[in-house]
Image (tube, helix red, strand yellow):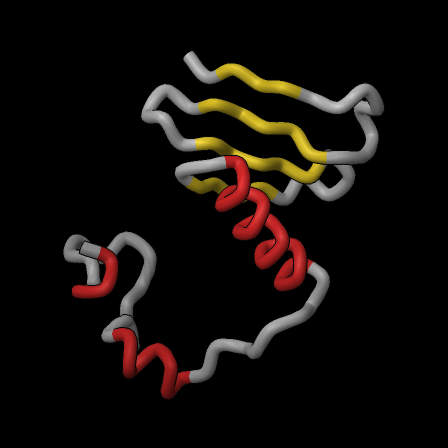
Length: 86
């Protein structure tokens, strides 16, 4: 069973959820965006990246990216996962 720690204000800050598998999820309370890592530091680093992408930062994925990653033409529900997801 996962457990969570939270700052005093429920509307802002970060909630840490200690997962059963040992990973730690960091969730931004204002946006609901979450990410995880092996440590709190890693979870916060990944959350910062997720928040940047959530706010419109980063580069958009192109058709060329999909081809390079081997997921060009993959549709939801395909029975086999692409190599990069196995």
